[in-house]
Image (tube, rainbow, N blue to C red; front, side, top):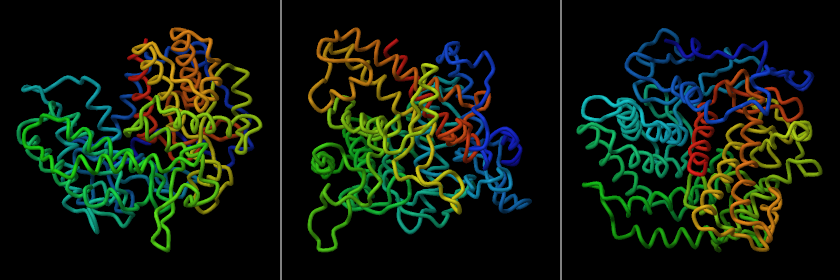
Length: 473
């Protein structure tokens, strides 16, 4: 089956390059904000995500090499999205590739889905994922941090992104008990190789999460720290635990703290030309903060949800996209009247909307950004319910105030308020979906979907958020 055969969002109703000229989207009554049972959509969102994972009997064709079967997908390949320019008018980006980061985030949801197992307790999709990850690792060049591969597992000219091997390792460890014996051997080899590589680069700059800048990345450091912590904690036989893991983890904790500029965590620190230490007073670029990757460093990395500096940053993220903010999305004002939202973007100076040749200053909200912030609220609600304590101080007070929580609020009431806030955000994603199919972005003015169709990470972020919600409800 070709990639085009499963791209099912017709250009006539979504991803329109002239979306700003359209009225706000009408939705079916069943999708009205107050009528959506969010957990009931989990099986559907999983199915929509799962169709972007190749298997032995469900292969994708390379749209740039039609008819060349050697370029077809290998089992375990995770498409970033089944979207490419010929399939999506107004979009000039080809997402029919396997990104290490996206693949790991997606496979984590497969590992956590409690899928029916084959004889012996294994899940074939996870076996396929690990084998494909190992194939890409063997083909990676110029370094083991290479970020993007063809659907056949060949290295594609791209950047080196050192969060990828960390996230991949975290996922492989989570999936290990669902692998068959042969694939477990492959998994151990892959984890050990990733860790050995990361120990040579964790203190060095890298290309960041959004593939736009080179420097010292808060997100990459958080992912690497979580990776090292989970490797040190694992009891899986054969996993190496080099002596440098502990010191590297300690170094990363200090490095993450060094991104604090007094009011927020800075996403990227510049590489000083004079060899001096990087400083939050010298971010990699203006207009890049507050950046959503700080929240993602909690969702996917080692930053605790109770870190009040991170919560202070999250509060600024929300305020910049609401009315009066520096990157205000008009759709958030309209959604507020419906009791849903807000939707979140990536950072205030964003210009990407799927058409790189025609940048749009201010960018647009992303489904995954919004679900990730909702997940932060769910994680925090679970932590407060467990501990009975609200991590409220002068730094986190603005974040809690956005949910109506102050020093007089009881812990149980704070849990309910955080749940309601997260639910409103996820409901906005569902409300603006194309009959539940989710692209990469929503138009910041109309709410219509834009950019590439059926982004795999969009579905994975919904599933991850709802897993966190289930731990509270």
